[in-house]
Image (tube, rainbow, N blue to C red):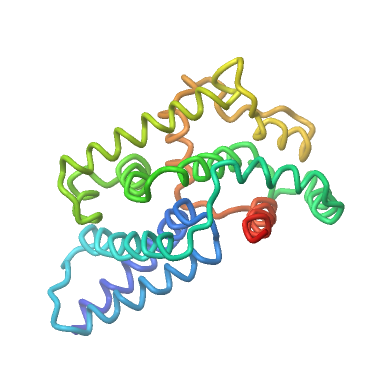
Amino acid sequence: MSTEAQGLLAQTYQQSRRELRSYLTRIVLRPDIAEELVQQAAVKLVEAGQGDKEMPDNLDGMRAWLFRVATHLAIDHLRRHSTWRENIMLEAREVAEDSEAFLAESALLRGSAETSAIAREHLTVCFSCTLRNLPAQQAAALLLAEVYGFTVEEAAQILDASFGQTKNWIQAARDQMRDKYDATCALIAKQGVCHQCVELSEFFHGRKDDPLAGSARDIDARLAILRARREAELGPWHRLMMRLVDDVLKN
């Protein structure tokens, strides 16, 4: 591999690492697993660069190639290890409310800078958890095209699918997400039952921050927040929460 190619590989990885980890976390929902997949994708990137396979010769092409490898690693992981249940977040909330240790750890984070954007962060986590109930290809297609800036054609290439199939996956994902939120989110429908993002803001900072205030309160408004936070990592409280989810799934 030429010195120029090596530099391109390193530059692509460094520039894409944060958003790639965020993307994978939104698919597999476990930050530690997402980090492992990022590392595996990096290894494959280096191996491909050292082999005979022709590699992209620009940053955009290399970024798409890296997302392609990571996407297939994530989908394969879900096929082999998925134990997700549609109502797992409600189950986890019940366990959390009965756990003195969890409540004590949560109380330590009250007023902290790490929880200053807890409402918006929870919206993105809620979106990912809701998205997890969809087929993996639909979830990935929606994230690639609506959050991480790929065209539908580029997303199709990443997913090894046709343009038409990928477009259908994106629309199906949007429709299903809209239906789920219309039925369950009190921020959208008066009869909804969930407004945890506002509750968390009140718990941690004593104010009722509404992450969808001033928006149309639709899927596009949620996707806009995901785009704005597309390099953001999970904060300490949501990492704590996802560990609790893991424990509930194991029982």
